[in-house]
Image 1 (cartoon, rainbow, N blue to C red):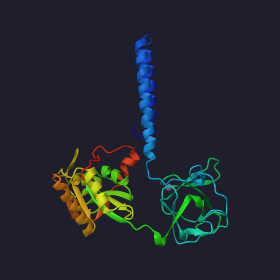
Image 2: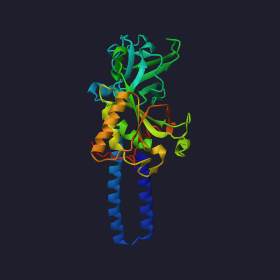
Image 3: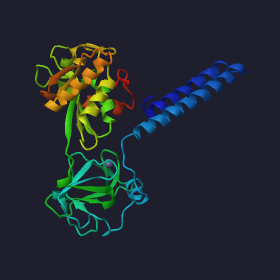
Image 4: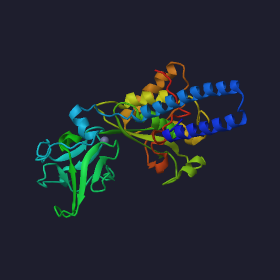
Length: 342
Ligand SMILES: [Zn+2]
């Protein structure tokens, strides 16, 4: 069961089936009691599915909020004017979402509107979602990634040339100064269908973001269909951006060898073809050494690892509908499973 809508569709079908059943067998008490039993079991199953669906969507790594923060961020409250820590603050850096850490605003877009709340005349591209309030008067702004309430946006007030004022609660924000901005590192892994590989890396500790794409082939800007034909030589791969203060390439590479089968040549489960080969595309000598070390470790344990170790080359980001595939579908991979190998 993938989404709540599907649960409701199933419930609807159940009701229709009941009506048809009762109409056809109006006098069969036995049949009806059996039907009641089936209904109860189905309802219990559906409720469990719906619960796990809600739980699934909550598994994004959110920061724990204090009661004060929840009042604004979750319950859409407003902090008292002139009290927030960023109202008169003018450090250079980035303002991020208190709940999910997504970057939202840059200090160069901040200005003093003398209104009592931090004001910005622009946002980081696609970071802020705008929704008209129920009264139709104002436009609410939320973190596009996690839905955290930020404040409201106003237009046409002539404060700056952009004529826009994002009026944001300080309590909804964190500030990261330019000096302490996170230093990131990257890794590229190919382990069969990239939907499944990405699913596991997204959930790994220290991973900031992931992208699926194609690497290791001859053609520039390949499409999914071209790669699937097996003629371009590309492998379906995942580019992982991680925070090296929270995880390491070795930890991620170990995970890679445990979420796909590194012993099957050009194949993962039902997916067969060179595009599904197992490969690490190293970005530096250290990554290459660690990968070879792990392969040797696995070989010593009796696994016959066929993983290709290649120098990284052009990574072509795949079409949008392949990104965050299972996250959007709310389901789990059919071809990738975690298996302990180290
Ligand atoms: Zn957020």
